[in-house]
Length: 163
Image 1 (cartoon, rainbow, N blue to C red):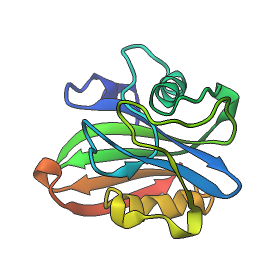
Image 2 (cartoon, rainbow, N blue to C red):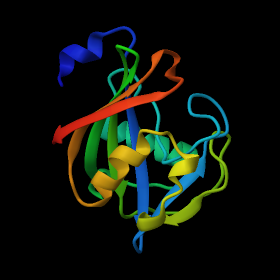
Image 3 (spheres, rainbow, N blue to C red):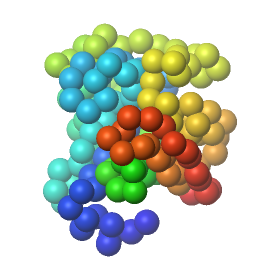
Image 4 (cartoon, rainbow, N blue to C red):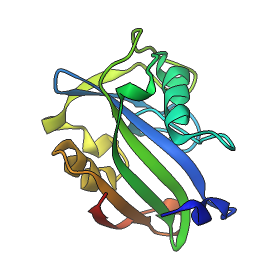
């Protein structure tokens, strides 16, 4: 996984943050764009030249209205998402254990909801999430590959190695 992959025209460098508090995870329903209709953490595309950690902090502020800093981020995974054989996203996943402010609804994300790690609403999330989220919730740090059929119609398979 390296910088060479960042030059591919179809691949996006993205972030995904899961705020955590008292054993619970903050999720929100995506209201528009890629992933609309699914519960998810907070994140999005890194801007050109933007460090992935700073992109995660920016997206968390834009989508949830909370402010964190790099010391609040715990890297949990890198998940490569494939649409058929095409790598479309290198997603850096973080747990966020501290922040300032109260999570709020935004233009992109619905009202935030807290969920127990042990009873996540996987049926309302991307199908690959039920494969990799339990791994990182158990403390594993992974580099995974989530494959969907062309057009992202169906989940195909998930592979991973330790990070």
